[in-house]
Length: 269
Image (cartoon, rainbow, N blue to C red; front, side, top):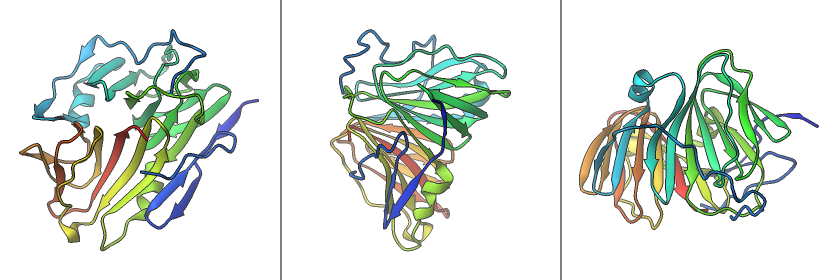
């Protein structure tokens, strides 16, 4: 029986826990699909972007990429063993013929409104919506009367079957955990293959200190402008900036008069 999915949020201090899909819940901590082994790991692409890059990082600008891109197809951005990402575009009135994939994935809607059909469930999504889809789950976008563009991120970690088929979130709601005098790491998705959260940095603190992790990550700037210091380089960031950072590369954010809101997806859970 089909149902219309809606996001559900449970807030606690600086961590957000959210889950959907038949009562299944993702963990609040910061797999092999044996049913369909022939599924593609990720979309094939005839179009590849050219990022600004340095030692251990790559920078993309979603605004520029959307303005200069064609109205349909998959534009590959990041293609690493740890994480891969691209922009998936569907023209108004078109059809989505994608097949299930071998890797867990995230959709972050950049433009348009549609319904994301995951197996027998229907999820209403629009700009700012975030949806997790389990590896092997049949899914596609339907009911879109305007152009749709989504940022797609695939985990490089081989999945297990013990995951929810889907989870849905809204970016407006995950930003409500902001605290005036503290940098907040607000985790809202945690499964074996990936973790995602909102990193909220008030301008009053000026940014954060250097961080170094043993996992790769993708940073998506939602709000605010500033600088990102990474691998010995300092790069300007603004809403729409996407930065891929390899594991074990030191990095930190510097605000320039604005609060910074960053979506971060981390390799592994």
